Length: 347
Image 1 (cartoon, helix red, strand yellow):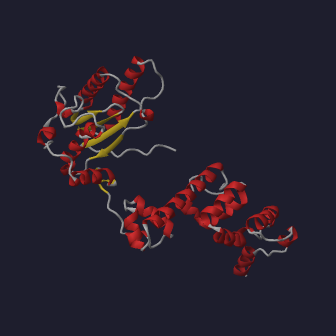
Image 2: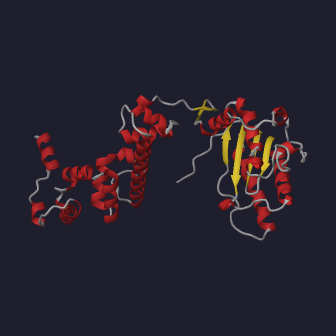
Image 3: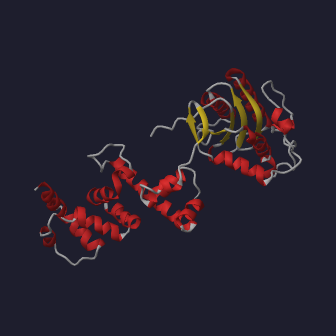
């Protein structure tokens, strides 16, 4: 599956990248110096400014401001150059980074000072220093002088006080707000009202959509009058159903449908029908766990039981899953209810 393209806009970004398996990426001070040199050279080439940074042992934080739509390009340059340096110096091969860098667009500049403080508090949280400004490899120490370091935010922050609850809330809001592109500008995504999520969807689908829209499980629980644990369980089962559906779809059991057919487009009845007819025993058994015996039996009786192409399968299902004491001849006598309904409609 292709990677989802990042939304990009000119402005401030908070960026984090970690070493693969959380391994150390800066072994000695010379490594950090080399990273900062690469950062400075990249800022010169790609035209961005650095407003905060901290180079921890196994990850880094950056706060930069771009002047062009080139975030992915400049970060690929920084990460690949440092990776080549590190692998060459320590005679290692393979990826250095855990994956693609993570980035958050700062859609509201009122959060900037809280974000700078959050970045600068990382060495304190890790027990490396006691106060902001002590850690040599954070911008607040001012031990490194580079052309593209902009100290405007650093100088405007009050580092005497620890991060307040309000400041942490601002950072949390920044990290968790879903964004969208509107007229080439990144803005906070407007949530759909909860009642609209539940208007035309099954409960589990509506819960999944509401969570994807940014609602907390507690907010959904309050709306439905359920417990947080109940919402968590419903959502977990939904994700397991989707995962099973996608795995079977990719194996080709929905051969007569689009290769991009989604779980919601297929619907529960079609999924269970094809699960019975074309999946293996373990997947059918998982279907009983996820959908429950009542729904699985109803679907079997309505869509599978009377299909004479699957007499042996139906015999196994009836005896193993439903405990029916029958012989194979019983299934040959079952009327095809779907066929009879179509016949009545056509007459």
